[in-house]
Length: 595
Image 1: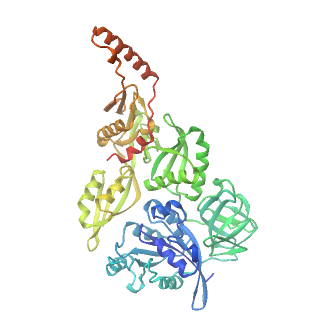
Image 2: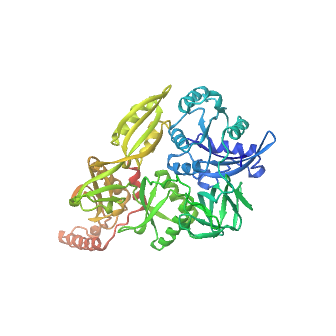
Image 3: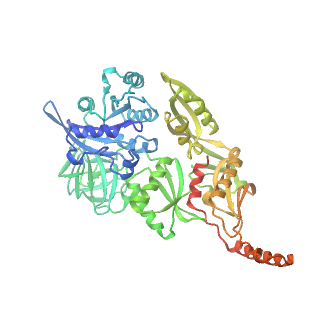
C-alpha cells in the first residue's frame, strides 16, 4: 500500500489539464503507439468536439523512481462550473491534487473554488504552472498569485508545459514524494466508496470504486449499503486505458466491479460496497447529495417514446449523478419529466447526449429555478414549475433562491460587469484586488436571473477574461409574478415563467414580439397575449393568410363582393373554432435568447 498514490487534476476550464494528463500517460508508458491521441482520456464524442472535459476519467499508471515501483491512480476532472459535482466526487477518491494554473491567464474563479473543495477534503496540493512555453506566459506573476493563495514556498511550484512535456518528470517525482499513501487496513472488513458508474448494454452496470479498508476477491459475495442487496463480484479489476481484470484488490486501490446489475436504481454514487461474510459496521461518510440549480421540462416529441425517455434518463443518471428527474405532465406537451441540472451548459450537454447516445428527440421547456411559496396559513411548498403555483389570492409571499457569485476579472471590465450584475438585481458584497490589475467582485444575486443568459453576456462584455463561480447562499422574500402566454385565449403552460414584478411587462412584450416572428401564419388570426393573472399586459397578432375571393368580380354591384366576403368570414370563424396553433420547438428555445 505504501507505493500507491491516488491524485486528481483540478483547474479552471481550458488551463490544460487533459493535455498534461496525456504527457503523464506518455511518460509512464501507460498509453503508447496508435492509442496516443490528443486528450486521450476524453473519450466522449462531445468532449472531443467542444474541447472540454465533461466526465471525470480514472486511469492507473505504473512508475519507477530510484528502483522502486509505484502505482499512480490519476483522475482527470472537468473545469467548468456546471460540472463541479464531478470534481467533488473525484476529490473524495484521492489523497492529493495537482492544481494547474495557466501561465498566461493566472488564477481564475474555478481554480479557487476547486482548490477550496480539495482543502476541505485534506488533500495534499501540488501547484503546477502550465503552458510555460507560450510567448504570453507570465510565470513570475502567476507564482506570486499562487504563493498568495496557498501560502506555499516558491520552490514548491513546478513549471510545466503539457504541449512540450517540460516539467513532467518533476511532477511525477513530486506526486510520489509529496502525496501521502492511502491510509487503510487491508485486513479490516471491506469498505469501498462508489464514485462513478457506467451502463454497458452487454454486462450491465459497471461501478467504479476506491477501497478504503479491506480486500475484495473475484467471485466474492458483496452488498451495497444503500439497498442491502447482495451480488457476486463476477469481475473486478483496475482501470488502465481499457479495464484489466484482477483476482483481488486491497485497500488504497481504485478499480471497477461488474456484478450483473441490470437496474440503474440499485447503484448510487457515494454508496459503500462491503462483503457479506465480514461486513463493515457503517458506510463511508462525507458524500454530499447534489443540489440541482436549474429546472426544465424534458418531453419526448412523440408521446409514445415516454417510457424510452425514462430508460434513457436512468442510464444517463448512472453516468452523470448530478442529473435529477421526476415525471410531470403538461397540457401543451403531454407526459414528460421535470429535470434538475447544475447549469445551462449541463442542460445543453444532457440534451445532446440524449440525442446521440439514445436517439431521443426531445423538447426542452424554459429553464427556471425552485421557489418556496408560503400560503396565508404559513404552510410552505416548493415549486419547480410555474404551473404548480397556487392561486394568487392564496399566496402570502414567495421566496426565491439567492447565490453568492464570485467574479474575477481585469480592472478594464469592472464598469460593464457591475452594470450587468445590478441589472440582474444583484447586490454588491465586496470587491478587492487580487494582484496587479485583477479584481475579485462578490455579488449576491437571485439565481433565477442568472440561469438563462448571464454567463454568455458576462463572457462577451469581458472579452472572455472574466471567470465566474457561484454557490447557493439562502432564500429571500421576493416580489414574483407568474407570466402566462396565451394563444387565442388558451394558456400554453410550457411557455409560462415566474419573473420579478418590475421586469414582467418588458419581458412579456419581448416574448410576444419574438413569438410573432416564430409562429407560422394560419388561415385565421392568432392572438398572442402575455398575462399576469387576469390582466393582459401585451399583445401581438399573427395575421391570417387570405385568398382574394373578390378577384373574379369586375365592376357590377357592391353586394356581389359583400356576399363573397361574408361567406369567407363565416369560413374563417368556423376554422378558428376548430383550428389549433402549433408552437415550433424554436419558440421554446427563443425565450432563452431574448436579448
